[in-house]
Length: 370
Image 1 (cartoon, helix red, strand yellow):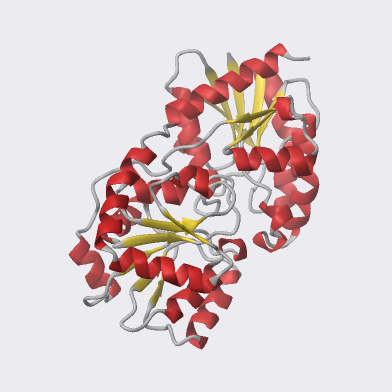
Image 2 (spheres, helix red, strand yellow):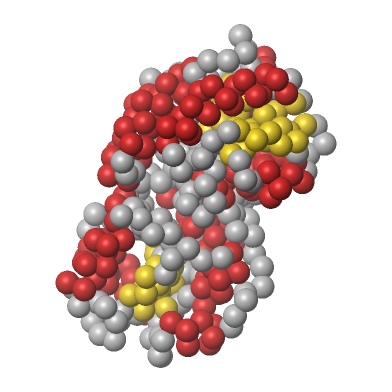
């Protein structure tokens, strides 16, 4: 089967989970013997992806949202048709509304609808128009969780029979850390405090404001909260809130970190917290569990599906509940030990090979339907 993957959205280092999903799924599809891939990419990225399939350069800068939409709607379907693809799969929730090649779209979440503040500028308006249209006009809609499937059916009025639940897997495979825990602690100037890690884009729906409020409720000496992730306009608000709460010495705002640096942070962490209000899947929770880091996470949307019985769940809208979960995670050695053991087993239930298999099954359904 000849499949064209619409990667017009890729802006390296700025797309968070979308970039992880695109890379890992493409790698898993490329390992199969029953597919031929054509990758539709923005200019300047061909060499990085060339080993995974035939590459076609789309004339756009994905940082310019108007160019991204134009590529999505016009350039990608035309390029797929010229390449002779049998299926065009758009991986970033939007996709062409017309074209000769049968279309499949992955809708990761409806955060743009539930939390419009999650996106900034013109993109927020575009998502409200383009995501529902792509879902309704594509032959199949892939979603990473049952929670997202329910949202797509309920809010986008897409028939349930057209939606395929295809869970994701580890965004960052386990590897040897670049630095020891002692080196990480020294670089963070952690002293003898516990390390609390959270990994997410600095966007309002990630609920980091309430996490800061929960941290302030803990009695000193508090754990050191480490927050890697690319900068967004919301980060200034987070920094101001931390200062207002007197947490300047208790939080480390890091920028985008490499895979090796992130691995070192996971391995050095005493606990992981993920307070998001809305997720399509929840890759960071899976990554922390795979590494045996005790996890406390919101019980909202898909996160309970991903965590299973291997994490401590809390009410994400209640700062006192978040603070209580953090206290338990850091003080209850028996609980922490149980979660360290349960996490890797839960994470092992997810694999990119299974994601690729479910994705190809959706392609076959798309080709069998009018």
